[in-house]
Length: 144
Image (cartoon, rainbow, N blue to C red; front, side, top):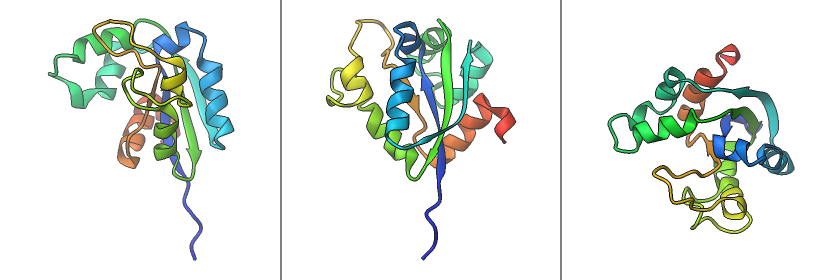
């Protein structure tokens, strides 16, 4: 039987999470789940970085408001590692809409609808191994 392969995921604490002082709580939950922190940095994301990160959404009505929100303050970017950490972090984060996110999840416990144009839902996690590779290269080019 082969050894299970670890994977990596990009995790972002978005400007609303940083502004509310929730970075430590998000990282605590990641580590409590048993994932390792491989890299961590605080970034003031500019338009170029964000347009590369959200390239698949270009042209959608929420694209520009999303870039505006994501550049509104510091973002904490992390690379985490562990077996099935992509799926695991997305489960830990909860549903994209904080109002519908289950209690016990990051968004369910700490998020809510603020009535603004773009959903401010505290965190981002890569949604597939391919996305993780692409996103990590954007936010942590030194790791590739």
